[in-house]
Length: 487
Image (cartoon, rainbow, N blue to C red):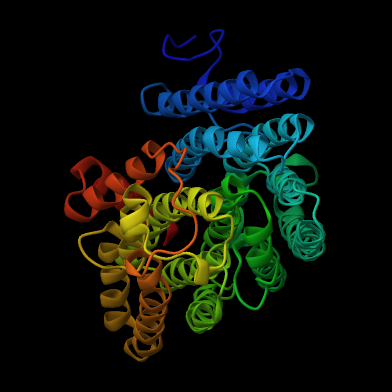
């Protein structure tokens, strides 16, 4: 057994899955906020350490159910890191909700247990080598977030959770049908049973699959998992879920859960690309990506709720990422991967700031949030830095990724560069218009000091700013290798 494997001498992959599910069982039973909040942070930290061990231990050989390769290790480490920092933010955020009576001890016990089950579901989706198991894991992560969106039990929260459940169920049904079609395409070539659902076997034999079945399957898979990604016009659940659920869940939804569905789309894109006679997935992805970018960019101007504003910003950026991967090629794939990482770090940091701001002001209405740089400079300047980063201004890492996406588009599809740049500029103008007053306007509302932990927010922002100036050569080489795998 590898000496670096954490927790009871288990290997790292097992620990990434076992720690969250074991912690969820404990958190469902233990009373008291302080103990459960600390256990939630500890479990998230141990899961992150287990994920980091994948860099220094020998990866297990692919099996019928589990796989660790160069692609999914990016998602696993990002998922566990943001899961850990969000649990730290959550500790102070949920404490305030308990003090104000918005949540009860029973609600909080349920919340912490669901948080770890959600992390288990997302981690399982990333390491699954079985397309059926991956579908189950995505559904598990979705159902747990549905329950957490409705945590406040208000009419609006329950309505948002119900909308999320209905639209998510439609999407996951499409994804299931697409998964079944992939199985039917593989069955004549690799035989019945598990082999026709194992990713590593499918990719090796994809060239012999019926291309017509693969074409139909990918359309259903893109629509199904695209619903989870938040692509327009399948996005309707996302703004309500962000606005009505606890802010830590908003951070997880934008920073992590959207990536889970994106990962599934990329896996099946690779499968289609391995079949020379199958439909090229790129044009479909570019179309949905551009539509999401432009639609969300205009919708940003109409938002009056700060969490809904950044929910539409997530739709915009997932559109950019899907467009980049649809464009394909070494540069665009590299940029899409970098943009995904930068967006996860930046958007979660923004929601960390927004969560505490909403608690201080007692509202999420933008008109009631003014002059933060004067009344709460730690939160105000943190929010401003996050907005600068998410808008794609230098020196943030998103500037680098967007520059690479735009330049690659000019090189490969110059006509598509026009709507791409147009959408980026429209979104930039909307963020500038909506948030200038929030940071620099005449102070309004409560000026009570913030009982907040700024460390998670500023840790994320520091990583994003450093990435815009310098990327370590090993990281660049690693991302370039993955970009070539994505084709």
